[in-house]
Amino acid sequence: MSNLIPTGRTDIEWRNESTQKPPKAAVYPAEANADKILKAAYEHTATVWTGDFHNAKQVLAAMKKRVKRPSEKKRAGGGDAVAERSRNIQTAFHAHRMKQAQQSRILNMLAVEIGAGFTLDIPRAPDVKAALADVYGKPNDAPFLLPLNQLLGFIGAHEWHKKGVEIPALGGRIHVPFGVFSPLRGEYLDLIAAALAGSKFQTAFDIGTGSGIIAALLAKHGVPKITATDTNPRAVACACANFCRLDLDNIVIEKTDLFPAGCADLIVCNPPWLPAKPSSAVEAALYDPESRMLEGFLNGAAAHLNDGGEVWLVMSDLAEHLHLREQDFLPQCFQTASLEIAEVLQTRPKHAKAADENDPLAFARGREVTSLYRLKKAV
Ligand SMILES: C[S@@+](CC[C@H](N)C(=O)[O-])C[C@H]1O[C@@H](n2cnc3c(N)ncnc32)[C@H](O)[C@@H]1O
Image (cartoon, rainbow, N blue to C red; front, side, top):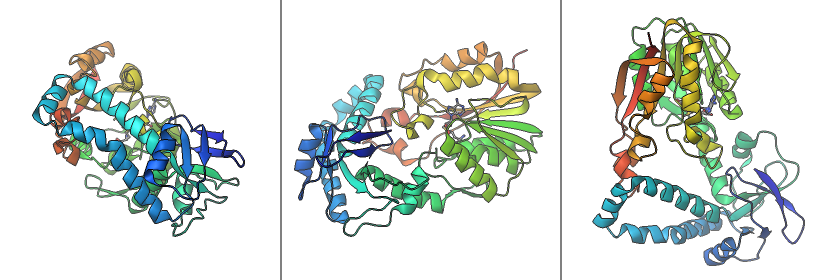
């Protein structure tokens, strides 16, 4: 999302990866502190930091403390607050997301000006060219404003992109840039690897391939011909680069909504797990509005499946625990799509959030089970 906003000098482009409204204006004060920036932020005015970069990070940290303070007081309520949350977990989920969105909007009001060619010309600033090129591609000619919090996110993502994520089931690393779903929580990949053991599929589709990890696993397990699809151009580029790096030349990647043309012996999909509206491009891999991708995938799968083939759906039951989906939603979807369950492989998440009692959704996360549904055409 990009927009021109007034600064009192010339109008300047405001870049923000989330769907938040741009500020009404931006100011360049000679001096600023967390309180002043927050006051302006609540009046929809962004503050452009022109001083030392490390001081900017400290001010952002101070802003985070102030913005997050009210929820910490609530947490101090202890047992009652936890019991209330578990009673009304769906409300807690929506309140949690709304609070996160509000906090993020306020924190994004501390910005920096990025000069032509992705330069950041303030004292002690790091070289941000590579991190910004990773996100935006071609360098900019005109300056733009960018929330400092996002710049720090881009720098972190760039480091991860270079380093890659070790995937034991693959016996290799997957490199994931900003804006593409990272298989950091890889338990579901172990389920896929287990299901692939001893299988003899000749052709496969990986629908919503993201980093390309599932297609890569299929190739490593000997599936000779694979087509991977995704609607996110960043994912398509990322998957393509990963297939090259892993020397996998039997995977075709397409920027396509759901299915490529034709049929396959195996069709795999790990859709976003929660039916809710994403608030940024990054969240589109986590939230599936009105279960559109899930239902689109299931309803179209049988028509793209060779006789005797299998449809594999990776899905967590977090949405059921958060009361965002009825318990019988998935079984009904399978029936509507003329698919029946052949086997369900299950695992529990091992990530830290599942055990974090301070996470308002810990009640649901602690019970979460991730399943790989092996489905066949109903007879
Ligand atoms: C949860 S991520 C899974 C990524 C990867 N398969 C994995 O398991 O790590 C879901 C992916 O589906 C993609 N996606 C969402 N809607 C889609 C659609 N209609 N057609 C194809 N891909 C879609 C998203 O861009 C995202 O990369």
